[in-house]
Image 1 (tube, rainbow, N blue to C red):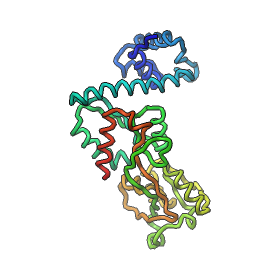
Image 2 (cartoon, rainbow, N blue to C red; image 1 turned 90 degrees about the horizontal axis):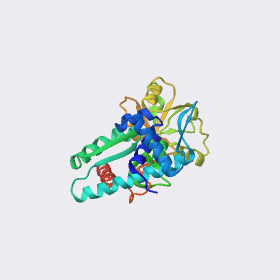
Image 3 (tube, one colour; image 1 turned 120 degrees about the vertical axis):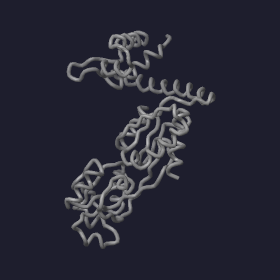
Image 4 (cartoon, rainbow, N blue to C red; image 1 turned 45 degrees about the vertical axis):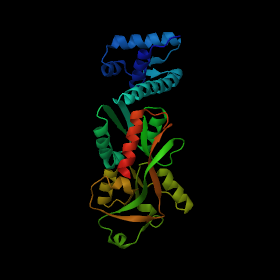
Length: 290
């Protein structure tokens, strides 16, 4: 059996989009050409990779999901081969797909991308933003080459970028809190507003260690929302210092007790397996945060 790599590339795009029309537009080929490539690939494998459901539209079969994961790995290996050849010829190019959460995109990425582009102008960068958990999922299924996420990093390899810790954001009207050395989470557990952002495991572990009941009185999805909630005296915001630094505000912040820390790092299945371009981008990231 000889596999047509072009058919495999088309299958990856269709498998990600689950839409023939959108896949054809991104591949700059006709819809019939996309459909024919998928049909030929299924015939060569003697498998059904995609099915059409009247309620959910185009869907991957179970074996289609397995082959999509392997196909992404094959695309990565192919890209790595070309990048190694180009590196040796001093023409490193290609694309690096990076998963990042918004605070990293604001605090670290601009400097890292600028430094990287000055050395490797031929390499394209695709940045996909999400939560730490989403980023780990993208690394797991190889949607991205590398991810920047919050600890814990297992089961991935990681390079530490920086340490982080949780802080309290104080409502303007709460002068008594501003005078305190720190905010005791047990004392104010009924007033806490949490911002989701990859610190949930660290928070849960700390609360368990100090026998504090973790009450999710109000949970928001981003730092801007948390700031607005605190401004309106709806509670005391609990957020990572790193994330808070990416959002302009005039509110007071305080250390908390118990102290809750986490790490932020670059993750990959294996740094030996990533492309030369991705390797070089990791170097740029580490240089920015040193």
